[in-house]
Structure formats: C-alpha cells, structure tokens
Image: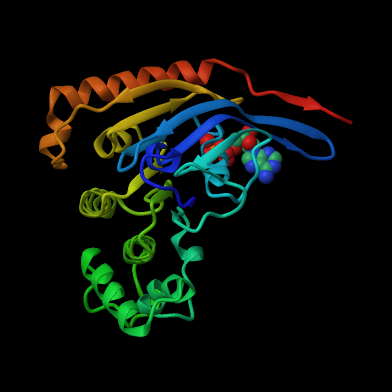
Length: 278
Ligand code: ADP
C-alpha cells in the first residue's frame, strides 16, 4: 500500500482496479485464452459479486487479483498500488475449506497464525481471535481441531481467520459451494453482517445467481471465455437483507431474471479459443 499524503492518488483510487486484464494459459500443446479483456473497478467498502458460466475465468481473475497468477496483459491495482505478488492487505476464502485450514492447529491457532505473521503481540492476538470466533458463532469451539468440526463450522473458521486479519479487500471464491443449503443461508447472512460491521471491500465469486443478487451491491456478469464484463448490474435492494423477505421481493425476482438471461446469453457468445500450438 503506497503511503501518500491526503488527496493523492492512493486516497482517491478505488479499492480495486482491474485494467484491461487478459490471461492466456500456454502449455506445450495448447494456448488457452481464458480471460480476454476484463475491465472494472470496485469502490472501497463495496460488495461485488461475480457470476458467469463455468469456465468463464472467474477463478483465474480472482487468482490474478490475489497476486497468485500474473496477468498476460493489463494490470491490477489495489488501493492504487500495482499487484505484482500476494498483497499484504488482502485475504482469500476458498471453496475447499478442508484444505485451507491447518489440521494440526486448533480453530483459535488457525485464526491467530496470520496475526502472528503480522507481528501482533500475544494479548492482541487473543483479543482479536476471541472477537472473530464470537462474530462467526464459534464460541466454545476455539480449542477444537478443524477435523472435529462440520464443513460449515470449518468454513466459519476460514471466514473468521480472513476477517480477523482485517484485510482491505476480501476475495471469496465460491466459498459456500460445498456446504448444505441451510448452512449456506446462515453463512451468507454471516458474511453480509461481517461486511457491514467491518466495512471491508468484498469480491465474491459464485455460480449461484440467487446468491449473487442476495449478497451483492453490484453483480458483474462475465461472458464465456475469453472473458469480458457482459453486464454490470446495480442491486438496489434494501441494505438489511433477509433470507425470506428479500428473496420474496418483486425486485429480487426481476434482478434474478436479468442475471439469468445474461448468463444464458453469455453461454452462447465467445466460443472458447483452443488453438493447437504444436
Ligand atoms: P471458472 O472459475 O469461471 O470456472 P477458470 O478460471 O477455472 O473458470 O477457467 C477458465 C479457463 O481457463 C477454462 O477454460 C480452464 O480450462 C482454463 N484454465 C484454468 N486454469 C488453467 C491452467 N492452470 N492451465 C490451463 N488452462 C487453465
């Protein structure tokens, strides 16, 4: 994060800028243009959901934002600083909670690990971890190991670890795809609550249209690969969301229908380019 005086670029810059990003995977036999030209910005504190057909490059773009993959063309900026490796003020929650937690550490130790790496004193780590454990409803499970917990509780631990770190930007890659429907609804509300309380910027990838509309302030619909932004939809639903009331609103049904229609369109456009190179 650049240290600037007030009013200079990093103050005014959006939390995240994806500027004409393209990503081509090149192997010995194939050249796959996964992401064509993605261009969007996310304001600080915004909750943006990204949807698109399977294989549209959603995971690819998230990995580029997380600094785990380098874009082939274009550039990504976080708080005005160019991403050229994993940024320090960003956290990611993946779908595979089972693999993202350290099995030899308790819930509390998992949450504290990045805080330790940040150099926080023990008392501070204790306090922050206790708050995060309470925030995700895991009171009483702090001393359990991940393998002693249900899938939903493991994912709560991963969310607690990510938010305890107090990142400026939180990336979530289909985080609830592997949990049952009831747990999923609980975790959706948990993430909205945490987002409201902490004011963190969230970029949430999902293939579930209802989830995108329920959670987001904005939904970006991606085209089929090679990807571009097919639609950028503002979600004018009340800030206070409720699984039953919000999903029953006529506006919710309209938004859902619009996103659905765009995804159907996305599936037809842009046949994926698979070019033999050998
Ligand atoms: P999504 O998350 O939207 O399902 P991905 O980002 O996983 O899409 O994949 C986008 C495209 O890039 C797909 O065609 C996929 O096969 C290809 N792809 C993803 N990762 C790799 C890789 N490591 N090597 C080659 N091709 C890849």
